[in-house]
Image 1 (cartoon, rainbow, N blue to C red):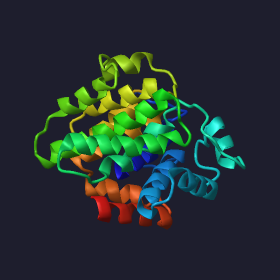
Image 2 (image 1 turned 180 degrees about the vertical axis):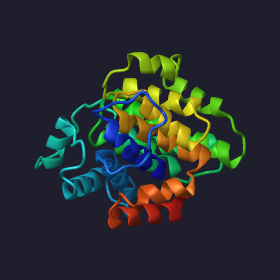
Image 3 (image 1 turned 90 degrees about the vertical axis):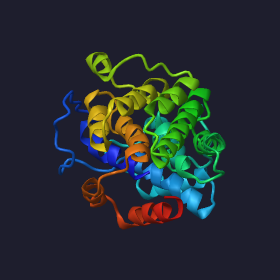
Image 4 (image 1 turned 120 degrees about the vertical axis):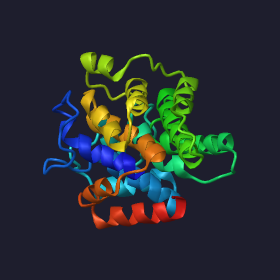
Length: 266
């Protein structure tokens, strides 16, 4: 899950000021965690505490009401509603916060693991994003994380398994990063951003290049980088110096959740 948070922090300063370059400085004073990080931590905390995803999201998002870039309009209304209910969203919020679900241990069989991860992902999405596309985006990212972890563990180095997983969900990965970059516009839907984020991972050579590619294609930079980073972490791991830099942007209570989650689930 830290990979998603790093992608969010690095991409935060480019969300409304896109760049098409990859040679930018990863961490600057303009970087910050956004709603993507808050929601990711909330999902991890729900898993650790055994509470509902809905309850955890409400607690964490109300605790941090004004993140960099703000919450999306519908989600903000959900947070502050007296009776928050799902609002049929297919926004990419379901996919950007789902990464903890991809790390849950189950049986040794990777297909079974992926299925259970997807079920958790569905639950994490449905409390807000109950549109089929919102659920699909979350399930797909969780499965991609799971199979990427398996490939790393087995020293398999088969990125095509991640590609096949995305295609199984009906996502078209025909466009390269260069092609996306030329025409990309700001879009917050799962249908657009999930395949873009996966393509950035597929074209990367390590964690650093994955984040840089994700930011460089433009659009919803922090969320695309968060999704890419979540898969890249599972496949490559994260260099310690990048972890250390990102750590300084996070409040201690978020650090504590991340540490506990990593100790329990890897």
